Amino acid sequence: MEKSLLIQSDNVKGLNYLLNIQNLRGKIDLVYIDPPFATGGNFTITNGRSATISNSKNGDIAYSDTLKGVDFIEFLRERLLLIRELLSEKGSIYLHIDYKIGHYVKVMMDEVFGIENFRNDITRVKCNPKNFDRIGYGNVKDLILFYTKTAHPIWHEPREKYTEKDFEKLFPKIDKQGRRYTTVPIHAPGETENGKSNQPFKGILPPVGRHWRTDVSTLEQWDKDGLIEWSSTGNPRKIIFADERDGKRVQDIWEYKDPQYPDYPTEKNPDLLDLIVRTSSNEESIVLDCFCGSGTTLKAAQLNGRKWIGIDQSEHAIRIAKEKINNIKGDLFCAPPDYAFFNEDSIEIERRLCV
Image 1: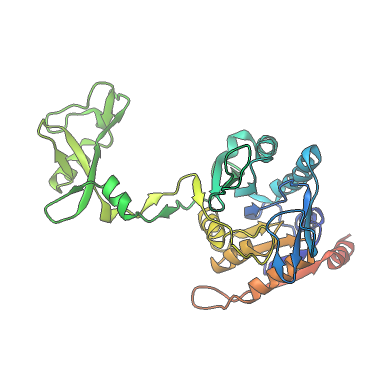
Image 2: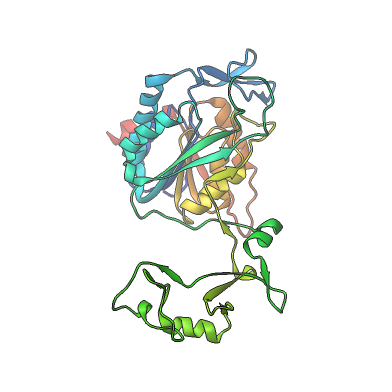
C-alpha cells in the first residue's frame, strides 16, 4: 500500500474494498475499533460542539447507535469476520466497548478469533468519579478487548515511568553510593536433575523443590560484580538497581480519560491510541480503524510512522478526521501526511473496473 487511505463509506463495503480491490488480505498488523456501544440513541453535533451522551435532542446526527441486543452482536460479527481476513499472522485487534454489552461481545470474539488468542480485558478509566444518585456503583470505566491473530503477534513491551512512591515501595534499600535497590531470590520453583541450574553455588544447593534461576557460572559472576546480597544467615539474593530499570510493566487498568470538549462524540484520549500503536505495530505496519470517528487512531499511526486506513460513514467524522490529519506538520521524526480519499462512488467505480 503506497499511501494511507481515508474512506467515507459503510464499513462493510469499505472492508470488502480493502479485501477484494486493494488486495490487503493478511496485510494489516493492527486494528483498533471503537464501535457504537448499543446505547439505543443518537449522538449529535450542535454548533460545532459534540454531545458526549446519546439521545441529544438538538443538532446534527454524527452517528446513530440504535442497534441493540442480538442485532448489535450480529452487526459486529459481520465486520469482525472481514477484519479477521485482513489481519496479518502477526496482527492484533483492540475492540473498545462498554460494560453493558462487552461481555456478550467477548463471547462472540472468542468464536471469531479463538479463545486461545484472547490476551486481555483491559479496564479503561474514562472519567472522574460520578456522584449523582443511582441504584448501582458509579461507572467510571469501559473496557478494551485485546485479541491476536496467532500466538506470535507483534509486541513491543510497554513500560511506564516509576513514580517517587513506586521507587520507595519497590526499591526500599539504599547502598553506600546512595543507589536505590531491591533484592529478589536467585532460585525458582521446580527441580532439575542434571542441568547446570542444580549444581552447588558457593557450597550451597538450591532449596528442596527449587532450582537456580541461571547457571552457577553466571551466579558466580554476579557475586564477583557485587550483584549478590548475602543475608546474615547466608541466604543469597540478586540485587536489582532502580536506575537500571526502564520502568514498570503496563498493567491491565489504564487511566486515559476522555477529552472534556471533544471534536466528535465519544472521541478517545490520544495517549491511549499512542500506547496501542507503539505496542502492537511496527514502523511501516498498516493500522486500521473502520469506525474511525474523529481520526485519533489515524493521527497516532501517522505520528508513529505507520501507514493507516480509516473508514467512517459520517460526513462529520470524515471532515474532522481530515482536519486532524492535515494539521500534522512533518519533521525529522514524522513524515507529512500522504493519503488518498475514497467514497462509496469511487469505490464502486474501482470495483466495476476490476470485474
